[in-house]
Amino acid sequence: MSPDATHAAPFAEMALLLGITAAAGALATRLKQPVLIAYIVVGILVGPAVFGLVQAHDQIDLLAQIGVAVLLFLVGLKLDLQHVRHIGPVALATGLGQLAFTILFGFFIVQDIAVVIAMMALLHALAACRFAGEVAVVARDDGQGAALKRAGAPTVVYPFQDAVDFTVEHLAGLIRSEKETT
Image (tube, rainbow, N blue to C red; front, top):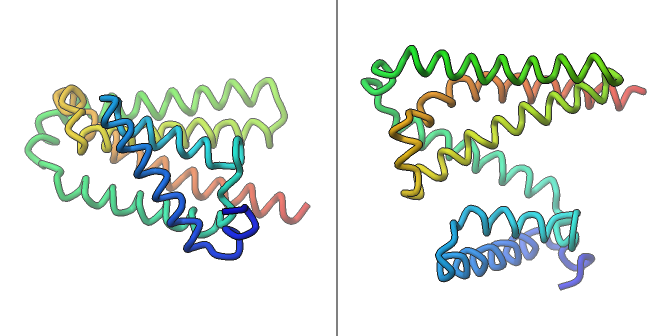
């Protein structure tokens, strides 16, 4: 399927992407590799960096946002409040430490380079924290995250990730609107 044909039919493009992803997941399972790694590799390969098969960016973005919302909803369903109370002080310290590290990292970047570039780097750092939290959830839900669960990672990271996600989305919107006005 040519890139022009997929651009004309977003449904066909998504079906192709799902087929490629399912095949890569099956191959990863057969090779006894984590399926999550196969999904990431497929995303890189079909994205604009390598083959550029993805043309329906808005539809893919919407699907990704819905997927993250459903994933976080499922985490909320499995959240044990007794466990949260038990690890409360550790969770608070870990979450605040992660947030402080990200903010300090961004602050030191701002000291050396232009503000707009620094803001984008800070947003990428915050988004990386968000992605790390989502990987922890997927690993836990995939049955590979027993060590994460013992460490309390899923219940530690998410309240702070939600706050960081809101901040990232808000700052990204402000930067986009400022870039459009200039």
